[in-house]
Image: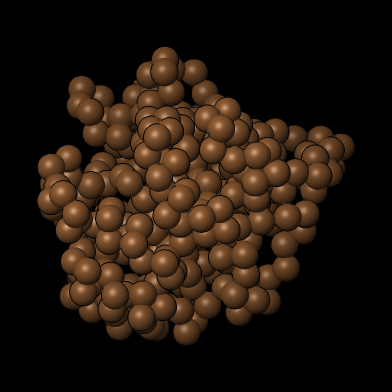
Length: 329
């Protein structure tokens, strides 16, 4: 990428300013690939910039500790040595491995790599990075979750809840400890649930939790998103993509965290031969367009869901680490 192209891309980002808090890969590039290069990262980030994204949190998912460490180190090196990484990536999102391993809740994450919250692991991962882990998604029913939430929030990290079979008591303890977000609300759930006493209803009812939502029409149908927006409000809802290497790419088979995933012609991404969703092929600008097209928000409101709101949620963490974002919100 030439210097003039980088400058043009950055100026474009300043005009739009979308912020994706959960993105696993993009445009054929897997952020969980331990061999990711600065050039590959620039390719993905420049493609994201063309979709109006100014900033993002590259997301690493569940893996054994040594694999997590390798993936984070290589990603961090690629960010530091790339042209757009220092401009677009203030930090990272760790989704797992402290999630529910139960079928349905685990999603495409490898259940055998999951475990209880481990502060020592997070300290080890963080110590190797040049920019911080700003968000952690965990299941609050895991032993030690409350302690880790308090530890993480004191250190300027946003703690989100997801891939969880938690009870009302679990959620209350987690939020009291400082958890503030539901990760891709409405997903990573068993299909058969109690009518009311289930993780989706409990999180919808918890007014202190923000909600991130994948508005692709696959993860959450428009009528369900309408209900979620009414429960959470436009000021506490955030659009994310949960994008994989199949985003901004043609239908086909791609790699994601050591797995094979398949993006179909309708834009859904699944584990091949199954109905298990494995991230998405959504772009953040399309998420904004979808919400407007489904008559769930005005254009200005939809833009805030993908720009102002993620910045507002993340502001205390950014301040704690002395990070100032460039670009408009």
